[in-house]
Image: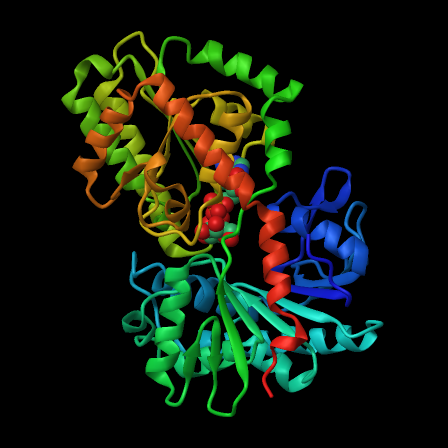
Length: 470
Ligand code: ADQ
């Protein structure tokens, strides 16, 4: 693990804490887990929005960093988060799965809110002993590197994009493309999940601005300043998931689920309820499969766990209705009298032990997004299965970052081809057991080789002050 000599200030849309039944606690999640040892050693701070800023404690147990909430008015949050981030950038950066909305007021809120984050950041930098390294996360804060460079010119700045970076033809549709890319280029290092996203970024910069040279990992700007653009795939805490896979609580859950689904082949989907995740297409493939193979109707169970997401946004509410209509239609068509339904739909987040038990239970895990930056569910699934010596099959969309790491060990699907996908689901069932187990071990091995600690380490190594230009 890379050790920083300077304190680290992380800036993200949200703070890494939530209010649990026993008060404020650190949120579970790869980024928080991976940063914990780094922050513990060097000290640091986390800046993020919270809708209850006056209540956020300065620190919480188990997370050795100061918490600095950014307070925003309802109107600012609406324009910046529900508007520009989630109805403009999100669909545009996910290859226009739905049409992005262009709204000047949202853009103004986005800039205003990024400035607001900048003010808090400048204050925190001033209060911090030593010269901190700044690490800004994700598409909500793409203007912040530029704002921060103006306020704290000497600080090393890194930025990581957790979603795909689209090709230049799509970036070109954004009226504020120049400002957004200039904002990013003020960072010392910009990280992406894959080489393809990184190359899309470099091509966009070169198309929009003249006099930019790409040399290895570096972009040399017309004023001589150098910016690193790098591909660092995010991952999970492998040890944590491997232990969780066989913990007593997970074994207990697994026993109950095995009983509930005894004798049935289980297909599983686990996603935030988001239109990029391909849930509707997946359901349609299941429907085609059950239509074509009537003998599977009582024998196959499809479990879709969908965690509620962004339900303040119109497209997400519509998606929920569409998914629930689809589930109802399939169950209405194919449930045999006196038998269980083919589709089990859980609209909620489930505790980690349950999640691990479902991963173990699945014969076929369907990770079939239309577009996805990386997709951690796939990595969690193979890690849990391998730890429990499972031999499930991973049906994996070719349009997510994870697909580039797993190669042919996953069954690769094009989720837009609903019928083709239904045939792949069928063929997944026919794979030989030994072959499945070997594939599972290889995929889990590749996740172990590049876990989330490696991601943090590589990212932080790229933000060294030495990367600044002459
Ligand atoms: P997300 O779009 O949220 O992340 P993903 O990477 O799959 O997608 O992470 C989802 C996380 O939520 C997983 O850790 C999963 O376990 C958890 N989760 C999902 N459904 C759940 C449920 N019903 N109950 C409990 N937990 C559930 C964004 C990008 C991704 C990128 C990540 C990290 O869209 O492409 O991989 O950031 O950079």
